[in-house]
View (cartoon, rainbow, N blue to C red):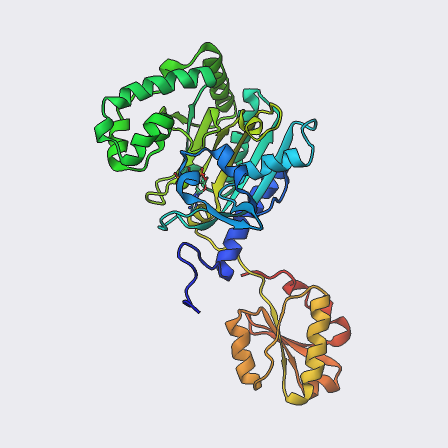
Length: 417
Ligand code: ATP
Ligand code: MG
């Protein structure tokens, strides 16, 4: 055993963590269903190519963050993000004719990066993809959905939406050339990584995390001056749509997404509450992705949110179901107690059961597990065909005939706290 600690960059989600984590996912899932996004689950590993081709070799993910391995000659990798897998599944399942295709997903992702607050090597994302719609109304729809979900989390005032456009291919190429020639003048000041990006994919430099790069970028030209009419029109339509939906946003001309396949709309919901890792939800349009995979031209747009980052922003742990505690007065009554426990669980009650110990110790445990009531089973009770039900919040108790026990316990059925 190398160590009793979890692997660096991974963590255990204990009971309260899981409750919070699940609440984040469940709320997103149910709002997404209102917009017609059904959940799909793709494997957590794929052929490495699914990611390397689509995400791009100069991306952080492909250049240094992949958990890749080989098995029986297949080059495989743990998924670093969800979009490529969803698009692969869309093609594998022959859904190209069935557009618009909407999918919701949630699950673990894996990236080999430096662990810090809000940044892990195994983390979780939830996200949506909308395939087959080239209208800016699709961009507005997925953004509305994101805003709706964040509202329901109660985060409306703690996040803000930043958007940008990367334009169509023509506009992006024009901007790329302009950016490259501007940045070339400062080549010596760029980080080593960005020097490489300068040749291969200068837009990626805008996404650099290096301090000096960031300072330089602040003065770099923005995308706006390089948009052709069609791209400008598209971006205007997205902004008009957001305004019509009452969704506040600001344009950040330096916002590009870390992945190669984006065009037109790029966006992030950011917060000041999480320190350096302030992006909680991010996405954009990726009209070329499915073709890159070898499929037909199918436009797409989607976003992914970091579940851990959202969970950190949710102060309250969703309450857990409080159990009933069944307590036999003596070892001789253990078997009857077991039967009672089983009967109540099958009737849908949560029931805690200590396997041994004197009554007093079991009462203590009932309080420790925050039981809502204790069911005391003694010789007297048994003689009368009943059980004593003690409400652990009020201290009040009564003898309840076994025949009508479920009715008498109705008020404890979905007791949370
Ligand atoms: P960053 O610039 O922070 O590295 P990214 O561009 O790599 O982000 P995306 O690929 O857009 O992130 O992922 C979408 C969301 O998933 C992020 O906004 C964040 O909330 C979450 N996320 C990404 N990487 C991690 C990680 N290593 N640990 C925890 N959450 C993450
Ligand atoms: Mg990253």
